[in-house]
Each structure stands twice: as C-alpha cells, then as structure tokens.
Length: 293
Image 1 (spheres, rainbow, N blue to C red):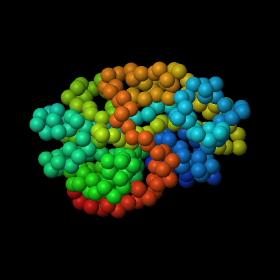
Image 2 (cartoon, one colour):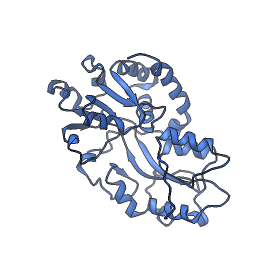
Image 3 (tube, rainbow, N blue to C red):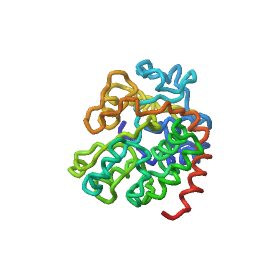
C-alpha cells in the first residue's frame, strides 16, 4: 500500500512499545518479530485471531509447528534462525581459530579470547535472549551450570550490543575478533574474511512471525499485507537471509546462510522462553550489566 509505514526496532524495544500502546494501538501488523515475543503479545490480548474474514489464503501452506498452536491461531511463523559464531580471520590467529571451528561453546571461555567477543544484550535483542535462553535450556548445561558458564563467558566479552545483527557486522569491520549473533549475508567484501560457524553441541533458535494487532476495525491494507507476508513471494525473500522457512521446500538462497541442518538446534521451548523472559533477563542484568569486564 502507498501509505505503508514500517517502524523497525530490536525485538524487546518493539514489544515494549506495543505493550505501552495497548489501550490505543498504533500498529496494524506485527511482522518479523520473534515467536517468543508474539506469545507475550497474545497473552496480553494484543493480537487478532486469524479466523473467518481474517483467515489468509496462504495459511494452509504454513508447516505444522510454525504457528500459534491455539485455534484459531493468532500468529504465524515465517522463517527461523539460530545464533552463529562470526570470526575475523585477520584478527584471530589460525591456532586460536581452530578452537572455534568446531563451534564449541566452551572454546569461547578460553582466556586467549579475553576482550575479543561481542554478543547482543537479551534486554534489547531477541537474538540475545535466544542465546541466553538456549544456554539455560540445553541439557549439556541446565540452568545452574548455564549461569556458571555465562560467568566465564562474560570475562571474555568486550561489550554487549543492542541488536542481534551488530556483532557480525563489527567482526566484518575489524572492530572485534569474535561475535555471537544473527548470521548476516552481505556482498560487502569485508565479509569474505569472516568465518561463520553454527554452535555445537547445540543452540536455541527463534522463529520470525507475523500477526494482526487487535483493533475495533481491521484495515483492509493490514489484511493484504498479512496475505503477502505469508505468500510464496515473501518466502522467497526470507530465503535470502534466513536458513529456515515455514514453507516446506524453500532452501536458503545464498551460501553464507546454508549449513544449518537442524542438528545444531535444541528443541526450543518457546512458551517456556516467553514465560521466563522477565526472570531470565532480570537475572542476566544483575549479573552482567553492572559488572566490569
């Protein structure tokens, strides 16, 4: 639509904005927001059930497990991503890079990487919360061991970024050696010097989703946008920057985002992650936002 206005924010910033506007919603559609955030918006009654006049044509093409499990659904999954380790080959010596090529989480706590790592803050970034929540949920750690691990990781972190895309951009720009964040596909020549590794033995993952904001009157433009957002044309666009798609048969369109086969992902419990978000983030802030590195 000609009057389309897109407001882009990091996940947590956008969720807080929507919650603040709950009694007088400004937005019509929530798009490309993490499923964990959509669950919170649904719990607060901010989303419109997709049924009857609001049921988009492409709804049936969304794979099972990629939508709100309630009936009728209030949000639909579009694409998914997992955190990636970005390593600048020019800044990290070959011997030290070898430690990281396996994707080992434990390798990131090696003292040789002191002050060389950036990662997103879970307070502002959905990717940041995905990383922290995934560590807490992993069987290899469990919650007490996960916090002990993050204590060690914190010692090597130079700073925490506000967005999930920023760490890999900083690594590509040569401002830091190692990043934990969202995978970035770019034609920028600087990215040719970046090693990308999916963490092992696993990591949390997230799902981009779309939903209608509940209002007294749903605008036709919002319905049209939702229909486009879950259509094949849009899925083709998501395939250019996401390694997983809600439509079966779509493959990543660029080599730099390929390689995520599913074994690297833990069975992420989105509803647990949503219900525990405030508790986990508050604990993270107390432990790390106030401590020097």
